[in-house]
Image (cartoon, rainbow, N blue to C red; front, side, top):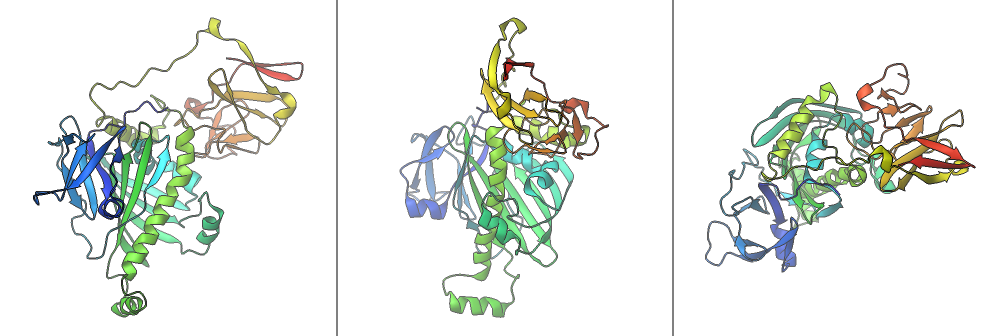
Length: 418
């Protein structure tokens, strides 16, 4: 369970207007509670009245077809004004994707990922990614990202991976602004691609899950007038730009599916072993903490005293097969085991010290080294990190070494001291 609070003091996308009007839900799940929504009876500042837990009126803003709400100590008086999402909006429609629920995730998982250059190649299989001009202020994070990739190449669905092979390769420069942890505003431009606006909205739902919407708009000058006219003759109630925006929203949201596998099994690290080159990521983590309630203190890591540890059975030696990473839960501890090319069994704590990825979910063996699924770092048979190149076996990143687990083989069965 992620110990970080979901009740962050910030603006959130509560629900797109179209979704609310279509479904008219009695309640909308929000944080670890719910809200009720009613049309504003007197045509006030906002067209809707939102009540937290059906009682407490919240500050509401409706923009680009979305109902936004403020959450903080005073629900009706925000500590921060509602941000300017786009200096100049497109004349085309802003299209929101259906909601996707990501279990066992926190909104900061998404924000930290967006500032984490190392994972785009390792996880998303992007050919190129460079993050630069990174600035962290009280209210916002801004950055630029140059990319070269195909949407869907890392998808968890085989049909999308196959389709990605025929999609054009995109070479984009993307401008990001995070207005608090809940709203990631993106503008994208590139040679031979349309100019795009994207809003990735992260809404806490429940104590430990996140509801995600992607809202897209395409520059209406993308297509020549004759192409729009032909399309509207075929589909009178739809615009070509709006259809493309809906497709792009789905592609962007799909990119989170592979990340979510890592987040769901990841361990929260109070002090992740980030590299010196990742200073900006430390700044992002501290920035996210500034939105937490003032009385929040992350729990201290618990460890057993040596006298409390006991020998526990892990598995038969014959079951820990070469070439595969095996995962186990023993006495509340998450462990991984592998057999090296000499036939020796190695047992480690399952979590990567870099950013807490579970090495038993997506980790693989390559040239007798274990590769982390999150950032592609390799660990040799002793658990020493050799960096992102499996061949650098004489250069170690000492701060990223795995924690070995004391073990023994007793009558063909591996036992661990936990």
